[in-house]
Amino acid sequence: MLCAASSGPPGRRLAGVVLSLIGLLAAGCGAASSTTPARPAAERVCDGARRAAAGALGYAVTAHIAERDLSHLECVLHGRRLRVDIVSQASTRAYTEFDTTTSHQSQVYGSGVHEPGQIPIPASVPGSVVAVWIRAQREIVATDASPTRGGTYLTVTVTGRSLPGQNALGLAQVAARATFAAHPDAAS
Picture 1: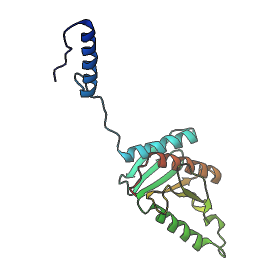
Picture 2: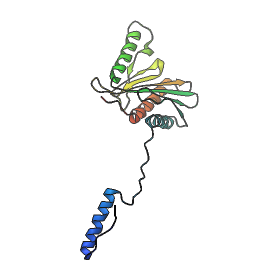
Picture 3: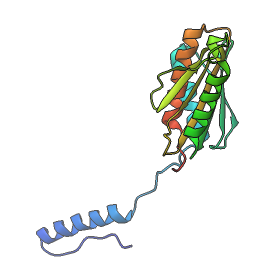
Picture 4: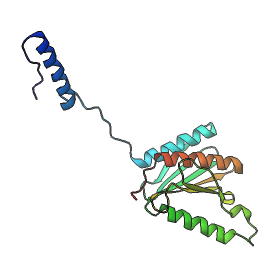
């Protein structure tokens, strides 16, 4: 493409320059592309959870991607005698997976069983549609899907001796929120 202005009276030259500039912007004449490719989703998800956990804990946390496939993404975070396992699954059946897991947990450990820590209790996780905390497992189970729309099924499990139960719940919620924020959902 030729990048030039028209000749003629000053008013026409100005109009020609303006039109040429508009053409340059539209066509990219003389401009270099500075777009950088987006980071892979697994890196965005795990790094987001790592940064969120480090912010909540107040110290450095490392992340390892154990599985990169978005249909079964696994991240493991480590820091000071602490481990956080994150499994997120983009699926059209994410809500069904959540419902099956939590129903089974409630049935197995429900009435008559003397392990109240195994019974799922409602939890708040920004970005989720529904979430529960299983205290005995120190695990958040959540989804941002609905019965009619796919999404992400997520578990965040906190292990290690450095956090008491209530702080483990808070850390799991922070990691879950960051994971939902960065994880692309499955098509419905």
